[in-house]
Image (cartoon, rainbow, N blue to C red; front, side, top):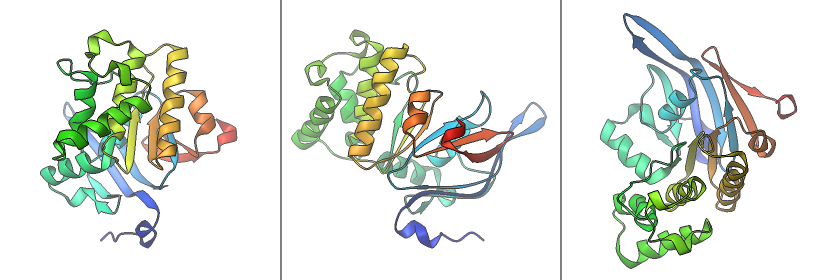
Length: 239
């Protein structure tokens, strides 16, 4: 029987306790994550490292409530996700989590502004107030003049800036970024990472980022590494 840790009342945004996750591959059960236990504090920037197939995306899916663990408990922002129904997890995710993806995931038939408006509309916010909030986020990422531009007319770096604005516009407690510069050249990627770091820290957000960027490792509060299905914190000096 898992009980919510007392420290979560104040400052712990994520708490995973003895989490295991496996998938069926053919006729065999493959354990991706094995007895994972860790906590993340409010406002921390966490970099998550690991080889391809080590379970990084699986862990993000569990923390966001997209998937559920086989065993163990997951609390995010005081809510125990593994005990919620799928619909409840979806509503929680819309309110409390922002996503930044490697391939941007912008809706191609919507303008930059309309893409940023989506999280607000999904949370029932519409009209002039929502529009003003979306425009303010586009201004924050330096794209106010591109508000009415469609994604196919934006560069990769601009598309990722729109994605960052979309991830932050509804004021989530947690931002998850899965290889956000994996589709960008090194210079543009560095600019995007700097912007993501700057905006999340300004707003006091908790950020977990899967990345191989040494620049982000250098500014991270802590670094975790997934290896053989298990997680361990890595000393910043050793990365």
